[in-house]
Length: 350
Image (cartoon, rainbow, N blue to C red; front, side):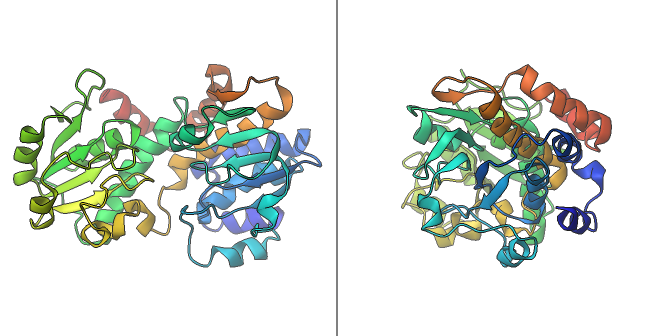
């Protein structure tokens, strides 16, 4: 663990991962995971390695998994090997672990003795009827930091990487006004883009400065898309955009198409080669898809979910975090971190 920490400190300051850093210090004293087998399926990038610090400090027998269809950094296997963190193969995924920390339900077939922690809302579709507790790290206010601020920032950095970073005066249509969609819309607005959000008006409120149109109104959608520079899917629902507009016309136009959700939201009407990064979430084109300063609180909450499974009697099915779970992590972020300005800007656009 010390070698891993020292390596990470060559890339990041403790202020960039304050929640995990403070969690590591606390767990190193209390050793809550001593002797427990934990399987972690968080998408593995360099900043993900910081998530392992509190688990290792807490005494966990940690194994990491590459979930099917879950992106990971090329060559990250060498880093795991360097720090003696086992990477699960097919046989190891059949074994039972005390806690399985999943992402999008990719590890749903791996047995878990005490329960599971799910990182994303996509996992609800797999675990809604689970016969054991599933702590949903996506289910509270902390996830807004990652999926709104972090994903919005990742979208803009990815567009810059591809040569499309200048957004001022350009029109962007964002499908979905959940946490991810709001983040993309906020960053588009902050960089001067005309921003249109397509969702259900009776259910969502867009960020201040964005126009909201009805997702079900095909005529209005096609009008907005006809002169848009870019369209972004962020609904989180598989094939959500299928049949919403004339896909052939869109494919034959000059509009840029990007996906920011885990699922293929377009369907077969729009081929992968017509979408930036072949329908894979656009920020995963980056070495660090989400800056550690934005994903740090979510990873800390995921780790805390494993602790809650150990220390609480939880009901079967999805378990949502409450203020008592999240507030200590948020206090660490505000006290020791460096995203206070972004948090204030986000709050002002509610």
